[in-house]
Image 1 (cartoon, rainbow, N blue to C red):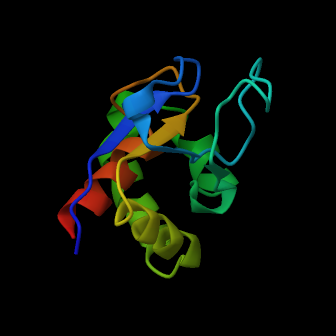
Image 2 (image 1 turned 90 degrees about the vertical axis):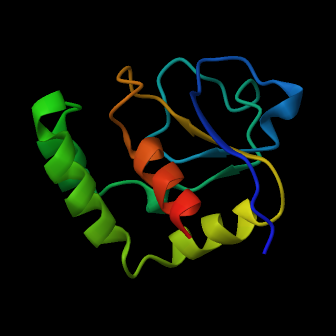
Length: 117
């Protein structure tokens, strides 16, 4: 199995040559970003947290640990996660998200999951 590099970055940051495949992992399309300008290879909205979990979390630092646990539970039987894991085997991957909180968002959890396997 190829252990590829998995980066995370806000979708508002410009694409770079070493990004590899650029995958948006938000359920909602980010405000102010055109589909043409996003430089995406794939959008996986169904790998993102459920609307209920996202609304509960609100990127509040004090809810991060519980969010991470709940999100991992949601991902347990998620076929879209399997798609993402397969893409990670193909080379460099950049997980894109729209949240302002760079330390506490779903891309951080997904990066951890990919790196743990």
